[in-house]
Image (cartoon, rainbow, N blue to C red; front, side, top):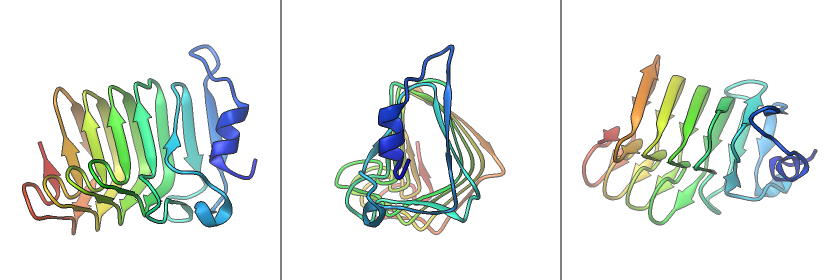
Length: 173
């Protein structure tokens, strides 16, 4: 498949048949035909070839990824960058979901009001060997905004050089 969006249209994941989409090193962006935001369904995981070499870049056309009401999802060995949303979650919008991020960079995203890198709401999230840096929000949570009833486990995670003109340059709870 040439794009993640195309691969998602071709699969039928289920609890009994989860699917992992393997991504080769390279850029996945509007320039290469990718459509943003990427909407992952339940029981689908994305696995890149390497954390710094597999780049998913929305090039400021939209947020990078939406994870809404999904279960059993792992995102690993990728960089999520160049996302923009005028309200929340420039890099990742995560709501009512259970997701693990392993060996992931979330860099250079803008969430207009909440969560430049990630906006997390009513979700259970594992961040393992994740770098969240150089993200911007103009109200709260330059790196991450963590909202109501979310459970986050941080393992070897670096959150640095994020900006907000409001509360929580790195993280806002």
